Image (cartoon, rainbow, N blue to C red; front, side):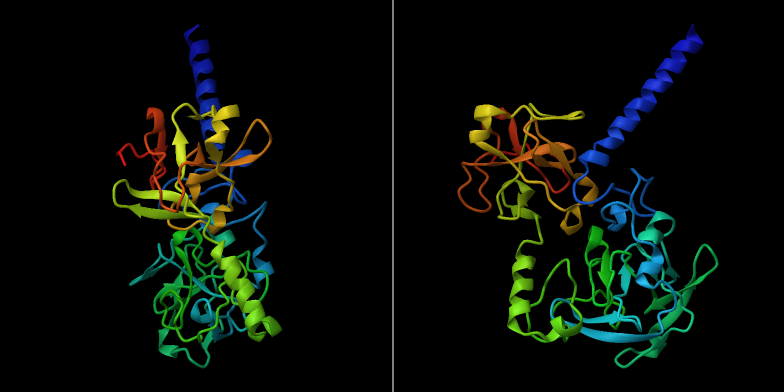
Length: 345
């Protein structure tokens, strides 16, 4: 009898763990995939590649981004990121903040390396604008030699499917396009004063790269929408989350995070509006694994933070307002760590 009880308990525990993991993955995962922690951080929290910036379904095969030797590195001017580094085929090269340059060490292995293929050091050379003394190599766990720039291991991004794409910039807050000095590329780094900050589309290639103000303005409009969740440093509440329009995000104590459930229905929705689901790949400033989505009873998708459905308050008239804080003792702003803020406004 005792053995049977232990068996039932073990089975229940497994079921609980599986359901808990589902909170941030599968149907309830926002954006385009499940969340995985970077190597060296903690155990993986699911399957997929979003901890590394993966997207919908399987990450494209490494050969889709011409994995292999970089050939002659090139410097490419980007209105968004300044001077950036590409391989000989024009594919953008990246660095990972959780690697180390002194001594060079890669902390991207396993699933991470599928989403971020290491660039081979074989046949790599410095083109115009790149100091050849900055090039080097580091031996990976599998014994292969990975290219380094100023000590930083160099990668491509599996979702960059054409030359000039910079879809990996800022993913997870730890992946950045390389500048010629090995530092993260950033605006004002010598690319001129044009405005082409298309957050998802990269620096552009071919004719689009110099098409003039039309494409630049379109890119600028996209950039304005490319930060769907922001952190507002409120003087009373501390760092709290806002939507793309700057409206404070709130959670409702009468909802539940597991299983995810809303109790804001009918008349409640006249005052508290469900926040729209967002693409977690575009989220910066908070861990991507906190971002999810929840299907409401009416079939619409609602944004979740740390598995809690979140809302905006109709009483907030301007960006940054916190008039909903503490309402009825059950509505609270959400911190940049995904927790409810109990301080008063």
